[in-house]
Image 1: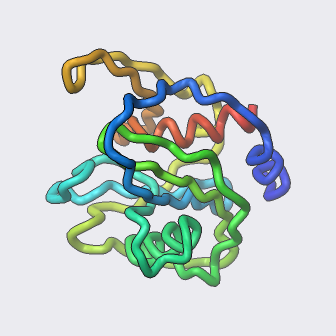
Image 2: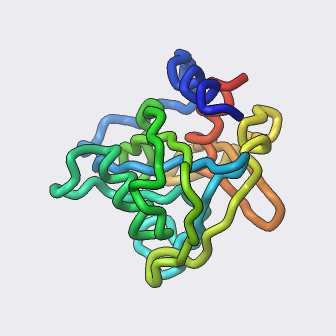
Length: 184
């Protein structure tokens, strides 16, 4: 996957398939980094003791802090903190539309290429594992499976994109599927 193909995909207008969540409190801003390198996508397994999304597979990221200049700065800071990806080794290509979550977050996905080698590490207390998945797998719309189940008193649907022992689902799968649909 070339840098130009990814940038072109960001410009495509693809309508989201996930339903808009009902009115409620103002969502908390967050950002994640879709970091790709040599045909691989970097992901994390969140620590099992976290309050939000414990043990889930996720893109590096988190809540936008007051010290962040915006979602891109947040995604870069969080990736550096969580997996040791230095900002100078990242080429930000752009952002995807925000992804709303049922847990009250509005996530800005930031797409970036990793331009220099780095040695990932696990931030104790937040991340249990750092790993890669082939970008070709998550960019193939046929890799995604739609599920429906009851949640908070209503039927909710969500995407999954399993890979080996990893069960990628929810907001992370929706964000990646949005990118896949733009690449299709």
